[in-house]
Length: 244
Length: 258
Image (cartoon, rainbow over all chains, first blue to last red; front, side, top):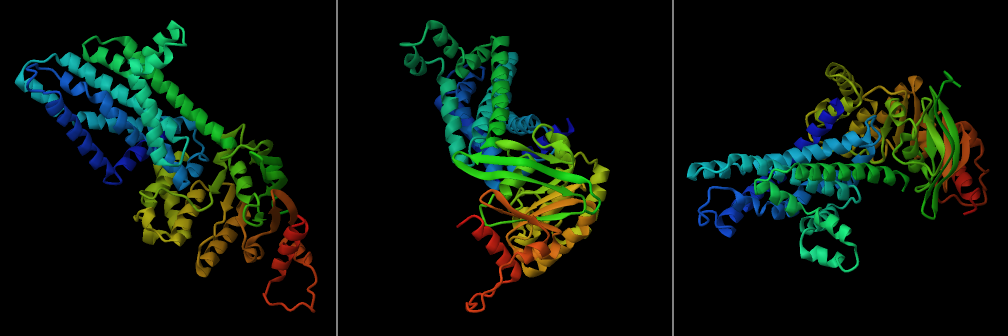
């Protein structure tokens, strides 16, 4: 537990060691508010809710979360510090978990900074705050899933740009899994059960159910399972690279 | 053999990267009090062997032990006994020297009090006071190397594996590094890789010559010297070489048939 905390602290502060964190947070808040007001027409809708904001969240995360996660392992490889990190008497899964948790906390911070929007809707009307809270939690979990995927891809390369692109592509497949773009590629040859299974992996599908106010356990379970699986895979990738 | 306790042992290590065999049947052991120099041309397999002992790489076959613990099957206890300086002394550039060493000490299981005491000792013995609160990215190569040594020594390990600890240092810094290794030597088993031959004479009690992944010699520096071929007086010596260089060239070039 102590080791997990040490790694978490180091990784979290690494985000703030350069102006990059500040730039990222500003971009995130600016983009998410910009999309809420200008592209979704927050005021014109005349509804006191945050769906104008949450509609864009999966798309924003698709690009921004890989930017947060790409450095996690690729940078260690480039600097050679992976060699000292992986020869310390610490279980590899603790390092994997600590790094992911730091990125997850950073994403949480970014979400907290958008909360003036929440205050604004409460000032303008009386929204269902339960749904908004659930949506924030859902968004955070979805960010965690994007980050776990990014960390996994990052462990494969020492090139952060490659890690970013790889994570965006895989993330895109998960985001689009419920849409025809992905499903039509599978439908002609795969049995119905497989098509259903792929459709059920959709980030947007799970997230939308939460923002619609159906706070389903299945969505939470889905994101948690995906995060656990990606982190497990991350450990396996690190382990496999020991032999090559 | 001084002290006599075997602290590092490798048994028939083989490491293949695809079609390339980087390490080919390396077996040796190092006891407490010994300083073993890994000598060999670039790409000979010195670093790979060290990485296997440290548990960063897994050998294709064979095994490595640190203080009696298999570095693959029993990695955590093996690593607790080991201080490892990877090639190039990597460190996090955004951290200060103090933060970096505390980070490593924490992961090594030292308490805050132990960390403070130990770091106070290391600041003295490795002369880091001047850069203590400076970011690692702003350090000179010499200081970076010293930070790496401090990192490897944080938990006062029984076994020290240093991959080219003097690479890139100026002559004074090299001298200091060697003195430091000499003062550490009696209580530890130390493996140092280098391709600087004078270093072997200066600090090592034993030298292992590696080329093309094979061990070509395992002897004291004096024994190696004895293997230098007689110089042919008829050949004009346009390049001045030391006796040890002659021996090294003889062993690595002749025996591999290059």
